[in-house]
Length: 426
Ligand code: EPU
Image 1 (spheres, rainbow, N blue to C red):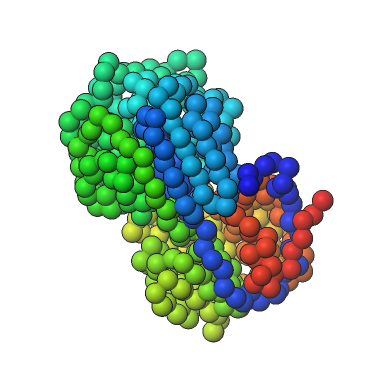
Image 2 (cartoon, rainbow, N blue to C red):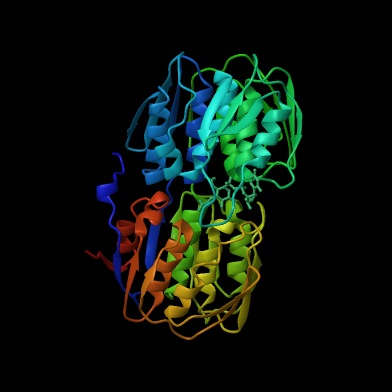
């Protein structure tokens, strides 16, 4: 089933104050599925078959992008099959790239496979500037020519890319993924230093290895890729979505209930679980089931977002929502993006007490929140606004939900199964 615009409501009406209790099965990770799907572009007359692909708006955009480049894609019941013929286009559609910034993940695979890529500039976004300079510098080091023309990035290479020693100034997730993919078809060996260590990098490397790539060191700060001429068909499964799991666990505690997430390893988000424990949450971790239970009033704690294994920026708005109800003053420092605290005014409109100075938020806990009409500024801020609505007294309307559908599959039924009362607001 494809996720289409008309199926996605723009507003939710939440009748807050119900405790969330119960268990949810965790979806496949959006941020793993996107690069893994893009990695199919490295294939030539071969097929990549994937399980546990979440049915999300962004996944549909990536599917359309691959189709527009010439791939044949089927997607049913979380199974995706991508056949990539010998001849594909290197020209990414403006319309699709503008819809989803993560489309830039086709840059590495297309440059390696076609010797060329034309990528309309995805531009900044509401999280901040988000340049692609690390990706471009690394491709240049690997022998590609890079030019910016008429609002597009154009890469071209004579023959194959060459293995190179690449070092990123910051462990960028997307740049690590793009260069790791490009290096699989390069001539010689590529070393990526100061690479991102996120588990989604490991899921991508596993997929590439199943396609015949020679990659070592993924999950550490140095990755080595020995290039090969051709990759072959493979099957893999998308890892569970740690950010979805964190969102439901925090929503459960914020509403003074207990939520269990099933099908995910706690090591994928220990930094968040440690901070939940600091705040007084009772955690029960057993194999692939994690339960977070509200037992006593929450206590203040502080976080700073960092690359993995640090506290993930994608859980920052949700954790801040949770801290609005913790006694004392908590501090949240956003160090990955320069504009990811724009949900604060809407939090305050619901009775929270948050002040921001220089990308640092100071949160004074309040005993109760009240309903209001608020916006979702981006995917994770939207999830946080829904959590605020669930925990508040009275009714909350959250609008601009288009952002939320990019990353949360079946959010409404999942929340209802936990006891939430919410409805689509026309
Ligand atoms: N950066 C540069 N130059 C570059 C690349 C990155 O300066 O060439 C900077 C960025 O501007 C940012 C920092 O490095 O300040 C980190 O950016 P990164 O490249 O790691 O982020 P990304 O790959 O664009 C992915 C996720 C984001 C997540 C970040 C950080 C996907 C599709 N997106 O983005 O997910 O926040 O890593 O972990 O994997 C989300 O799911 O809500 C989301 C935004």
